[in-house]
Image (cartoon, rainbow, N blue to C red; front, side, top):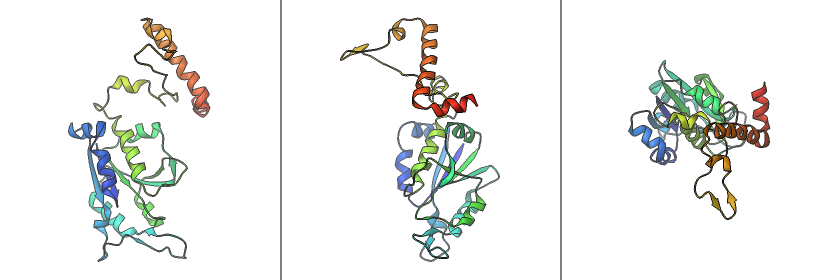
Length: 224
């Protein structure tokens, strides 16, 4: 998979790509990630990318030209283009899995007050990571890259993915490690019993109960 991140602040993204699982996936050749400063595609002499909105209003809007010109240069028939905006559909694990099927993702990070509406004519979907507003799209882009790349074959052990949170609309089961007791807090006896069938049953039940308690909305979605 190839992922291109269009941003005005590449250094925000660069640090995220140089550590941990994402860096290892890049080094292994499992994913190629490019960070592109779309200011370079501004046709204006001063490389301006924003301007005041027609009709008046607070803030500045991103102009069409640098976005369009950048997409002209990097997009292909295999590209799936995503605009990151609070008005988009809310991102979730199901969407992360869906995005893994594309050969080429392009993520457009906004900034300032918003976008010229015409930019939406060049995108395949608009995505939000939640009902709140950030200063730019770099954090949402990083979250999407992280959630998608870890699902690619070879990045993480598949067994680790099978029962994690949001698989089958359930949260992950509670987990423990050594010591077996600490400050009077004990690991459940079943987990140190050696009975793998009973452990599997316990964990599945815990996933259901935990989801009912913490995220009943997921249980409703599961029922539907």
